[in-house]
Each structure stands twice: as structure tokens, then as C-alpha cells.
Image (tube, rainbow, N blue to C red; front, top):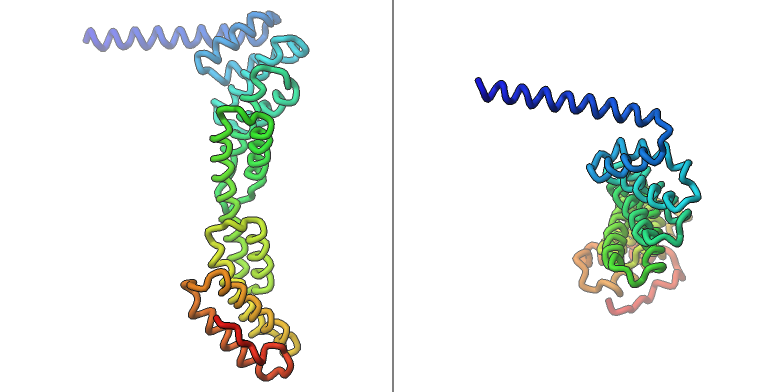
Length: 279
């Protein structure tokens, strides 16, 4: 019984303190005491009450614009939104800080955090990658401006991570055309993927799918287009085998070569009648 009464008293005290705190906060919001608002905003920030801290800072920031306090308030406001998980607004305020306070002691950190917020906003590979590109650009700019920063290695690592994501999106997008039997679009998309990401781990598969798409496109073309397209298939075959002579797709690739050559036998003077390449 004593324990129950004690818990009840504590609950009442906590509730009263909460309402007193709310009442004081509401009064402060309506107050013109900007110095008090600044002090309390920083106290709220230290206490991790980022909602109230941000609200007060947004009220007084215009008043301190052009003063030494402006940089401190702007930097704190950006972190308020960051700690709240609102990376869109955090990125916005860090970006503003970099632009408005280029000589601040915090500008290097703000430049990194601007990029990092966009990294946190970067979605899975199947979705639009605008924020991913933005984060890569901002991290690249950070490395260029602050090559001696202790954050450079982390920035490079995050760039690599995001490039891998873009690589996967590029491959999946091209593969989608292939799966839809749109072989002409697939060939273009696969080639663009190799141009953008020559180091891709899918390189062997992509080059094989270009070959296969070339054959299937030729095979399904109207007769007047088949000659050119089967010749393109042979070119894709030799490019593929030259780079991956021991490929896991070698047997299937050889099959497309044989079938293409048989069809081209019906077209005299193609330039492929006496092929003697040793593959």
C-alpha cells in the first residue's frame, strides 16, 4: 500500500511539472524576450528536446540575422532536424549554413552533414535516385574542398556504396527491357550501363545479354533487317569472347554464333563467309 501511494505521488508530481513546463514554454513562445528564448532553446537542445528547441530558434533567428549568433543558431537548427530524423529539412539547413557562413569554424562539418543527410534519404535501387546523385556530388565536393578532413575516408566509402546502388539500378532497368522482350531498348540500356559503370560486377552477364539480345532481335526482325542485325550479333560475339573466353555463358554464346553464321550463309558477300578467327 505504501508503495502504491508513493508511485501515485511521483506520478502527480511528474504531471504537475509537465503542465508547469508546458505553461512556461507557451508563455515563452508569446514573449518578446529574445535573449531568454535563445538561452532556453539551447537548454532544450542539450536536453534533446529538439522540437521545442527548433521552434524557438525559428522564432528568433530572423532577429539575430547578421549577428555572430546567427551562425550558432543556424547550425543548431540544422542539427535539431537531423536528430528528429527529418533529413530533408536538415539537409536544407546544412546547405543554407554552408552558403551563408563560409568562414565559420563549423562549415566543414556542415558540408559533410549536408551530403550525409542526402545519403540517408537515398532510397533502394528500384526507386528514383535523385538524392543519391545529389549526395555523391556533395561528398565529392566535400573531398575536393577538405582533402585533409578526417571524414574523407568515410565520404569515399559512402560514395562507393551509393555508386553500387546506382550500378544495381542501371542493371535492373536494362534487364527490365530484356525481360519485356524489347531487345533493341535492352541493348541500348545495357551499353549505357557499361559506359556509366565499366567496373560493374555484372559486366560479363551484361555483355552476354547484349549478344543474346542482338541475336533475338535479328531472329525476330523482318527479312530486310536481318542481314545487318545478324552481322551485329557476330560482332557482339567476338567482343564478348575476347573479354571472357572462359565464360560460363560460352556454350550458349557459341550456339548463337553457329546459328547466326548458318543464316548469314544465305546472304552472299557478307564479309563473314570465310571467318577463321580462332575462338
